[in-house]
Amino acid sequence: MEKVRVRFAPSPTGPLHLGGVRTALYDYLFAKNQGGEFVLRIEDTDTARYVEGAEEYIEEALEWCGIIPDESPKKGGKFAPYRQSERRDIYDKYTEQILKTDYAYIAFDTAEELDAIRAEYEAKGDVFSYDNKTRNRLRNSLALSEEEVQQLLDAKTPYVVRFKMPVDRTLGLVDIIRGNSAVNTDTLDDKVLVKNDGMPTYHFANIIDDHEMEISHVIRGEEWLPSLGLHTLLYEAMGWEAPQFAHLSLILKPEGKGKLSKRDGDKFGFPVFPLNFTDPATGHVSKGYRESGYLPEAFINMVALLGWSPADDKEILSLDEMVKEFDLHKVHKAGARFSKEKSEWFNHQYIQKTSDEELLNILKTSDLNLNMEDEKLLKIIHLMKERATFPKDIYENGKFFFEAPTSYDEKASKKAWNDETSNLLTEFAENLNSIDDFVSENIKQNLHDFAENKGLGMGKVMMPLRLALVGELKGPDVPDILELIGKEESVARISNAVNNFK
Image (cartoon, rainbow, N blue to C red; front, side, top):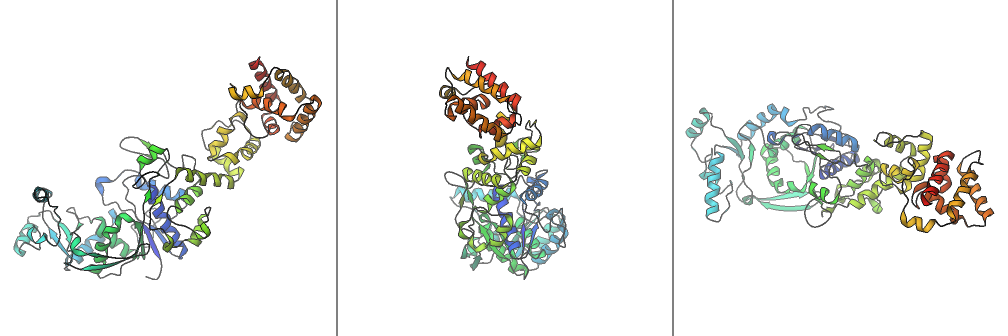
């Protein structure tokens, strides 16, 4: 396998988790860094847990993130089909093949029989495992005679195909991220490879698909580490060259032990899914990063650094820059702790990098009441984006551009307003009417001249004026606010404030 080919193979059992996005991203970065191909394959053999709309959600989420597959169910490719449910004929062929080897056998044990055996073991304080120590005493083709097996088959008795784990072999396992390890086969059980409905389990199907699709590297979560011994032996059983493996560490919750979950997101107030997801069974909507106001570039940058460090500890990287720098050998073995604050920091950085025009387009697609011409909106965006973490903050923090204040901050009022202020601002409002070209530069000069003529410091005029316009002592330069809300509105707000403080 000279060409690098990787696959992201999620199950459509729900929305794509943050950890799944990171796996897909690392697959993509590695493939593109090596001049290889990135494949999206849908592993939908678990029909009991299938969720309507989950596959479409996965595809849309990856597209929003900019992680575009070279081959997928939607895009097609030379190794189609890319849904496991459509590959039954392929699996049947390989089921026949492995049953001709000494690595597999058929088992007729019912779920009730196995539950009864487990109960017997538990009564003695033991744990039952279907393995090389117990299989010869159970109802399978290893323990039964050929005649008994044939009778059961003729009677169409349901059966599963199990892997025949070798006795007392030490397997040397290699992982790109974690290095070398070893496992003894006596510690592994005889996993089911094909269910009694004829469909393969994950273990067998993914081995077949990875071989058929010429996958060179398997990058997946560390929860699959215990299966590495079985998967290595399955390749041996089929006489195939195994791909190289890399198991990613967990993304940890913000506090305490354990991996990040939706419960943590609900508790600490952040999404764990890239997009909103509506549960088709309950109608419950889980919030996504996209709908929470995150830019896709910021989201992906944040995800990439949950377990990988680029050269010189750079933090802001485009997708192309990540591709150039990515190295599987530099992915961390230890878990990466998620931080809501850090994710917001990334979004703030990207808001600053985004053009005013792009931010205007984003705001226009929202449900905000932007009843103003584009030219003024662009000026507001330019003034307010420096303080924004999310696009909506530009509107929320600059609401005074769109609506006159209906109340005035009490603490600010005591600081900015005294008995002389009402007369001062009334006079200044009249002075504003003398400005023909009502732009910031002219307003600033007018303010300066007014304060100077009154023998006052600029703050004595600027503070109460800001309070009248905004309702608080915040916001950009007062001349900029005056220009954008216009002369008429400015005079009206000053008048409202004077009447309020009377």
